[in-house]
Image (cartoon, rainbow, N blue to C red; front, top):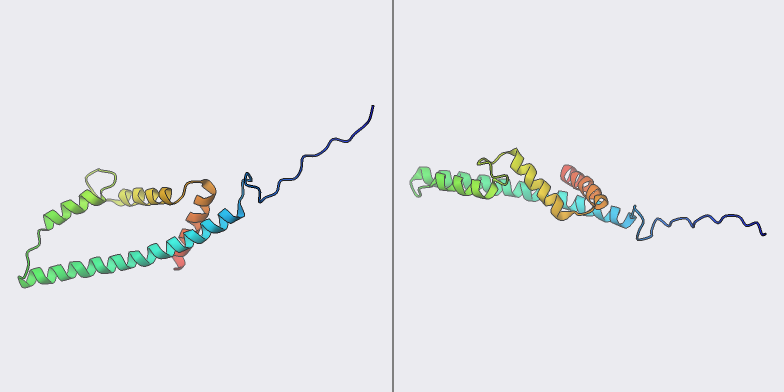
Length: 127
C-alpha cells in the first residue's frame, strides 16, 4: 500500500474564458460607458439647443403672421412618439423606460452592464 498525498486541483487562471471576472470585459465596458456617456451629454445639449431655437423661430414667424402653427397636431404626434408606457401622457416614467430600454439594448451580461453603467455615469457627469 503506497501512501500518496491528495493532489490539489490546479489554481484557476483569472484570464480563463470561463472565469467569472474578465479584465478585458471590465475595461472595455468602462471605456464604452465613458464614451457613450460623453456622447449622450453632448448630443443632448445639441438637441435641446436645436429644439429651443426651432421653437423660438416658429413663435417669431407665427407672431409676425408669416405662418400658422397647428400646435394640437404637433402635441398629438409628440405624445404618439414619446409616450413609451402608453398611459396617454409623457412623464418621467417614459424617460426611465427609454433609458432602461437603451441600457438593456447596449448591454447584455451583468459584468459588462455594471462597468458600462459606471463608465456612462462618469462620461455623462464629467464630459
